[in-house]
Length: 328
Image 1 (cartoon, rainbow, N blue to C red):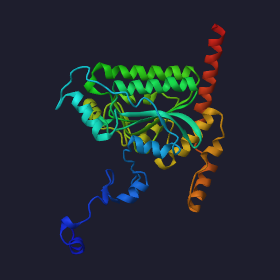
Image 2: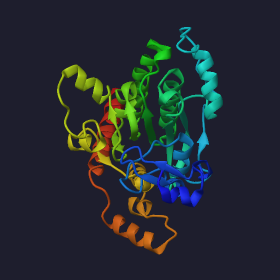
Image 3: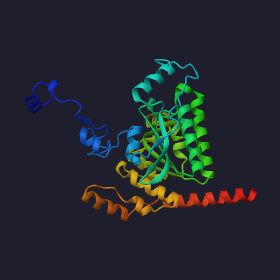
Image 4: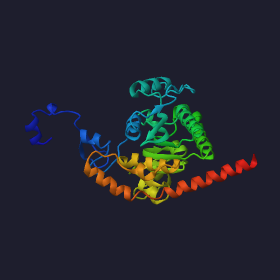
């Protein structure tokens, strides 16, 4: 600690705690209040910290529009799995700590007036791992969305399949992919948002099979981690390997959207998907004149790359319905 800090605060223990946070990427010190106002994004390097499910919903959905479904579903210890503690006890302890029953929150909401089925993963619950409850809730969300003909938006943030449930957790990969396939056959659009980190069985299943795939900047996205891959193949990996920007360059995702712009972009895409007005949906809801001017500049040059994908989806859905009608 510097002499200046000692002089100003006296003893080190007298320094106010919790006012500053260290950036995990650049190492810079961030004033916590400003950090939270930026929605947990570093003001120095733009690093996007992991965001909780409830925080994400509050940031994305219209106020008081989120209607939660299937909150009561809870996992159970199907294997009698014991690590440092029995899996059943771990579930109870994690639920008490997080206030959630499992690693995903699902329901229906509106984003700038655009209706959607919304599923948001919570990394704080056992690393956002996918087990029986996560798979079931996502499958139910897709089925309900198909009935309502409402687009689905899924936010992924996960360490992968939940090892505590063994093969049961791996079965959720096929289950969620099957649910999204039925949604696609019903002609309903699905959007996947990949956040930091999205890995393992989640990446290898529902997070990668939606009609549109967008990601936050700098998010780690992949099946196995880069260190595991480098050790296995015994080669140095390319710079930025498994990060959003690298995947965009390789054509694995459709585009990258900063957290501050995510709500606007999702509203625009949902408007395209439901036949609404994408220009009106893209307009910002700013309080400050300076922010409004910046929003106008962004709205005049909307993001590209996603409209062709939506058009292709509509054409595919129309052909599928025509084939089905012909068989009938």
